[in-house]
Length: 320
Ligand SMILES: [Mn+2]
Image (tube, rainbow, N blue to C red; front, side):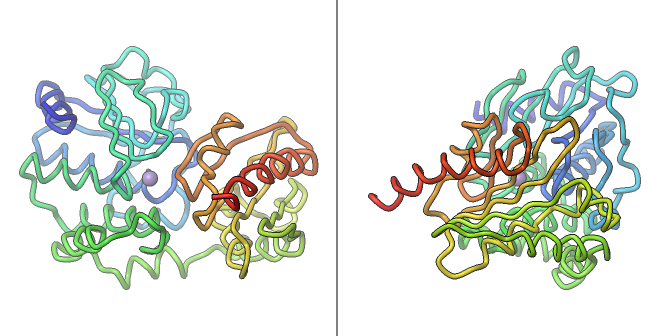
C-alpha cells in the first residue's frame, strides 16, 4: 500500500476529523486545511479545521475560512487528527493531539515522520497538491470552493509559480483547479493587492534597516517598530522578498524582535544556498529556498550568528 492509500484507508475507518496545520499559518496551511475538510465532508465525514493562530487577513475571504476554530487545545472529541505541513505535534501549538490517531501530510524537505501515518512527498510543490491527489483518489469531484482554497495554496507556496520546483506539472495542477472554478484574477487580487495599510508602513521601516554583505542582505523590525506601525505579526509575512529581489543577492534574511527576548528569523534563497539546512541548524525548518526559525536575541547578535553560519554555506556554494 502506498502512503496515499494508507491515508485513505485510515480515513475511511473513522468519522470525525480535526484538521490542523502549523502555527502562524501561511496560504498552503490555510488553503490545504480548508480544502481537506471539504473533501472529508464530501466523503461523508465530519471535519473541523482548528488552528492555534488566527487566520491572516488576506486568507479570511477563502471559502469556509469563517468556520476555522481558533483554539490552543483540541476542542472536544475527535476520532483522528490530520496534521498538515508539520514536522512534529509541537509545530501545531495545539495541545491534546497526543491522544488522537494522527495522520501527517507534508511536502517539506525537512519533513519528519511523527504521526501514526505519515504521507511525506517532497516532490509536491505544496501540501495542496497532495490534498488534490487525495481528493482524486477518493473520487471526490472538486467544487469551486475546494478549487479556490487549493489554488490559493499552490499560488502562494510556489511564489506565484516562480520557485524552482515549479514545473509543467504545477501548471497542469493549476489547470485542474481553474477548470472547476478557481478564479486566478480574483485570487491574485485578494492575496497580492489586499495588504493592510500597516504592512506597507512596516515595509518602509524594514527597508530603511536594509544592510548588505556581498550576496547576503538582511533587515529587521523591532517591537517598537511594530507598535508604531500598528502592525500584526502577519504583516511581516513576505517582507523578506524585497531584500532578495536585488541583483547579485543570493540570500535574504528578515529578523523580527519577538516576545521573551527571542528573534523570529525568515531566510529566503534564490537557490545557491539550501536555507532549509541552515534553518535546521537553528532548530527550524522549511524548503530549499525558504526557511525560518526562532533564536535568542538581541536582533544584532542573532543577525551576526546567522551571517557567520551563512558565510560558510556561501563559500561551499561558490566552490561547487
Ligand atoms: Mn507548504
